[in-house]
Image 1: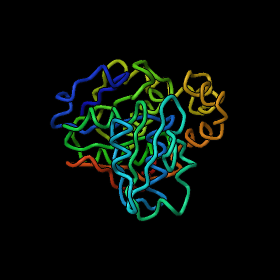
Image 2: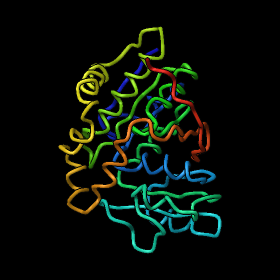
Image 3: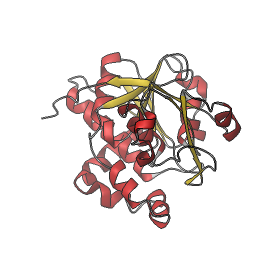
Image 4: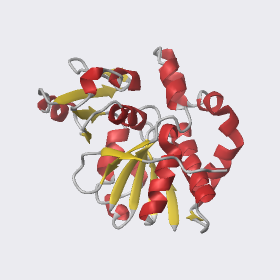
Length: 245
């Protein structure tokens, strides 16, 4: 099984996902928020690219959230903090979300056979799901403003590490995947402190979102994998984290 890690959304074409599994990673904070929303009982999650598209989806059966430059969009029910979705209002609703980076990654991967959203919070569950489906995979780090994000790369490394722990068959990795696997193994005991050195975490701290960084760096805390096969609406694929001993 081949697994490639891509540094940011602009470094891959949609056609490269054909017949493969796609894992979109935006630890701070889009995919962590998606995992949280589905764990809170949302019926599904629809990523959209623009603010007007999200605004058009407002209704009794939807919960609309989004951010630009880390800040909540005026008039939306929520921003991009996972804590905004820890509310009974989310249960039974379709969450519509637009963000600067993570939703772009999901839309870019629309030609994949299967699409998953991952964070540290569901990394082992996501690894189990990838191995169950068995297709070659692209782990897409959403990055930040067309650049690589430390936490996304480390999350890709975590998923690869988990896959290798679960599977008896060796993985074929590209160089970035190999580097991120070793980087994760070096820092997993001090993950929060390492992520706090990255640009995205520093910006969130400046804006008062240190609690989001703490929450989003929790390892295997929410074993729910947002999943889509055809239409771009992610639904919860519940997976029990495999024994990695």
